[in-house]
Length: 611
Image 1 (spheres, helix red, strand yellow):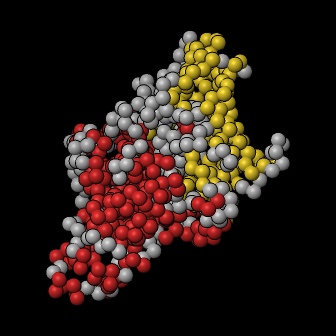
Image 2 (tube, rainbow, N blue to C red):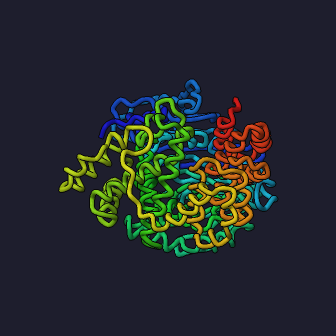
Image 3 (cartoon, rainbow, N blue to C red):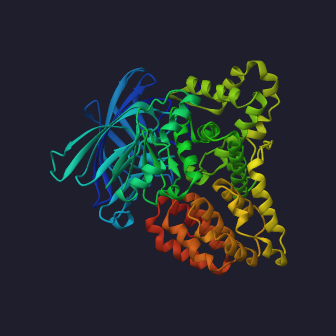
């Protein structure tokens, strides 16, 4: 295996590898910091080993010791997004194969980008504060000094002290709790994660949480205001898990719990092992809910068990996960639904490519992240360009059952490790050794290393999409005198995924005249639709048509939840309506403090606000 280099990490990857972390946290809600102590069990990979570098960002380091001896350390020059290398000098030399325990006492910064601290009024219950983390892609270094790269996997053990009226959870199995011996108003929660995993999957949440059992290995957690609704919505979790196991092999993580977060959570979901984080926006999302959960469940194999070596290969995580997610839809619903979701994904890809620009190298499937912030590189490209490649190969290799056989075999081969695109491709050629002549005809360079849309557009079954396309075209071509022909019955025939597709198609067209949009509201009553995926797209259609009444509704949706998928495009649409650009900026500034730090940083860039 070639020596690992990761442009997003400062840590010494060729010299040593972390095997285990032992974490002790004291959660301080008054100061918005974690007071921490971490012991890293590090395996030495070279002879004459006497120093190592870890990733850190905005951490206060108090003391470092190695095998119990206090050692010298220095923080290197701070990089704008990678943080500061923590350089540790050992007072002894070690040989390849030996281990050293490096212990670090430290404290996080109140502005740590992995952590969001919520005031009681930002929660559903309004009584207690709340803390949650989001480490993907390179934010773990703001809460633990570590080798913050997906190429290194380790187990972990943790003890977390929190105020006794609150509950702590982590991306690990619960290992008991006890009163904090140093403070009778606090409780210590213990956790263990026996399966090796990358640093970006370390997760913590502390809040007034309750849970309900939803299956033999699953509970749903949230504030009590959401918990019963969530238990009802997630009742299919075990069926999805079993379906995924039938496709990809045994589920190795033991417990599969779900946590519904407060609205400022920046993602749709996050596949933290044993505890998937989910946005509350999916509770009003109909079919989109099943998609989010199927996606996060699929990550238990592709991402968590087999991990991209660096973020330049993130399509290996995301493309395969979308592929398995849609195979779950095929097993639980129909092949037609899988095809329909492929069509929707292609449109998401077109929108991402348009946003970045068709020649932007960040639209390559395999990217170069040298001096590129992973947050700014994030998009639907690895998800949907990756899925499109896998679907294209499925068609070439003999259909879904045949290709899923390869995916399952790939997961078994690379389980518990990390992988590059080159290794994936070599295994593809090995597995399909009798079809190498077909694989050699694939335009690999066009797929992997060329910006813009893929070289091949998959041919999807359009059965479910035809009604959406026909209705969209009727509106696009309608003259003023045709508007009376539209009735409520047009959309009554569409199911929830089709309604999402209809509004998504309208967004790909030139903005509709205002008279058309007003008529659409009159006959379809889209303002009162609860489904967040429909509402988000509908409000963008209204703002693009310069319907001024929609501006406050769009800004309200952008700020009452903080999911980047919704918040960023809604702010951009209002900002691009020149009469309301200042209103978009003003609203963002008023709500900035309630948004997740990464979301706030990206919206500020979208709205051209410096600093």
